[in-house]
Image (cartoon, rainbow, N blue to C red; front, side, top):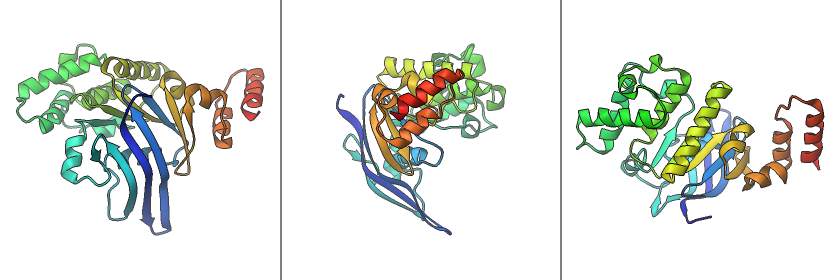
Length: 277
């Protein structure tokens, strides 16, 4: 693996609740290299999204206790100030959230929102130039008639198109790292395949390091180079795609693989025997 651009070490996140302390992330460590697709896999509540959000400072609150390190080059993100994190978000590390409908403001046009993200970091960019750049970005992620669609509102886009627009916004400032949190959830399988193909192409063409957060092992098999399996806030298995799918070591990973629906009963039995051996 080439030199890491992001190094996370001993990350711990705990939240104080009325029922007691919840340890959402417990000692997570990993590295991410340029042009790599790293998949973080696990069931809901395993700590995947909290890990990613903490890297960007999105879990900071009075009831949160955060420990460990997340270094982006020479910058320590865990101890960074709010001003430093604002400079990082979007410009160096961008995130595509799970539900694009709630990520866009419903009363502003898509193109204006993308242009606003650009001008927030580059105030010298004029509004007209920002809108032109927004249309170029929408075109780059496969939205037809991009200049006209840039003037549309979020509710006028389909689910797949909103996800593409969210990816376009994330790419607006040419970040080094893209974090995609369940980018194919609630999309039909055809649109899922298109979004995965888009992420793979962007990773290849832009040398973009990607963290893909998902519970869907089918998604992982399509695009990942390496896999981290999380359970109850910890990484229980890590390895290449082939190692994880064909030689899983942890019982939890084997259960995840065995739970993947397979139409043919004979193939299902063979799969259970393989992952159980």
